[in-house]
Length: 149
Image 1 (cartoon, one colour):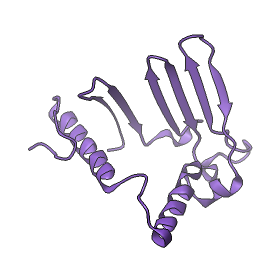
Image 2 (tube, one colour):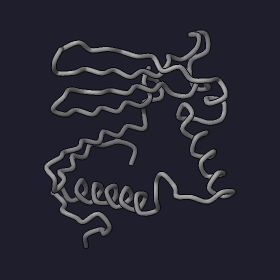
Image 3 (tube, helix red, strand yellow):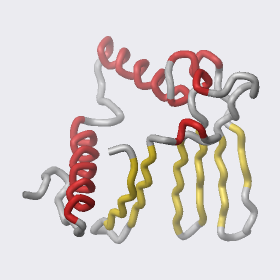
């Protein structure tokens, strides 16, 4: 699925909203992440890869972090500077580079991954349940490791 919205209510009272659009290539910010809580809001903004940025417009914008505390109400925006080697090593402004670096370290030295197989399984189950809810126009209740019948 290339686009949609999903709201997740967790047993501990937390709520998450996922908005997915695979059509953001023409926008300034290819990826945005928001976290909102009792202390305020945080927003991360990441442009798409430089190789997709329109020629003649100069370099794509720098990734940004905006912190907006509830008190005092004073949003601050920080540009996140990245080394050229990171963006050249892969998309997602360096995260691909760090994933490959961590994997290589685990191959040679061992250790535990930052994201486990169970984490990946939970993400897939959440996605499948979201598709079931949308297709059947209903709420879906599920545990973290099983797709309902």
